[in-house]
Length: 281
Image (cartoon, rainbow, N blue to C red):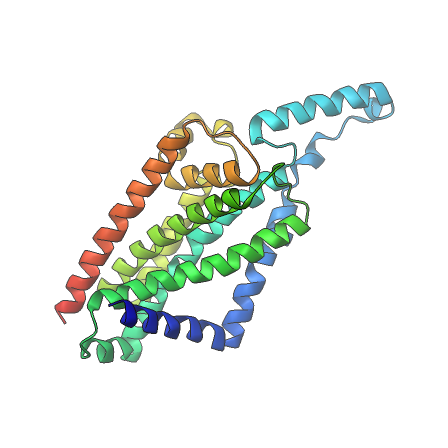
């Protein structure tokens, strides 16, 4: 099973790398996310001191201190770009998970999946290779995203070490594994690719915006706060910020436990239903 999974994984990675336009676009996309979307929401510009205050150094200093204190309370950092770019690592992982479903849909349409199903390889290997391929993509692209964010001004916490980076990576991988397993399960049963793309847009955008990926939960309307606090993307974004920028997490072990439990359920359910579909062919 391991050998078959690795062989199919190699095929997925080779297909991604050899398709030059797709590969180049996937490398450029993280840069666009940070350079355009990230820098366009510059909240610091909204807190510039009024002209009368700015002309008085003493008042300007007090004003700046008050603004930084409030920013620190809201975002865990005095730089909003740092807050958002760390959350965008999770959001980017969320959208990359859709590619597991897209790959399955095209394999079905081109007849490649039918050819695989007449071979004696374990059916679980076909499913696992799709999930692992997304994890490899997310690892490469999120690394690029982080490097670009740091180059553009993202402020990592003091004393950050390898353990912190691995912790953030594991959280991002959990999100990628969970969402890709969901789309893989849907894609095996879907008859048209439009179903996968429609569900992707319907699910991913609310998951991103109704979470702490871009804005603190405390700044949302009360009804939306309830949704955000139940959103697994919120737990993932808060954990990534904890590891990368040192923002405190209200309940560290609860966040980890709920995220791991949800991803485990999605993986088991997806593997079972996907293998069941393949065995019924």
